[in-house]
Image (cartoon, rainbow, N blue to C red; front, side, top):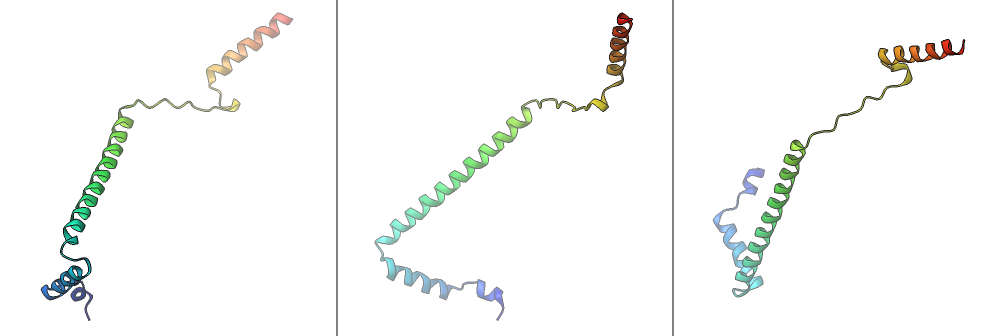
Length: 99
């Protein structure tokens, strides 16, 4: 059998399902069940939209916030040339002072 035909429900199958639901729960209980399902679906939609709103709000605030500049980590071997020149003059001046 084709799986597509199994997924489709005809009017006969739907009427049998409705009949058994009526037998199980009764005519008085069905409106209460439908109300409860409606409230549950509404609450689920509200919660999911609240979560989506919070995530979008967090993304927007993250984009607006200026990002801090990252410091470059330099080892003693990677000192800039200016620092080496300054160190050379300092050490040179101290050796001249000693002599």
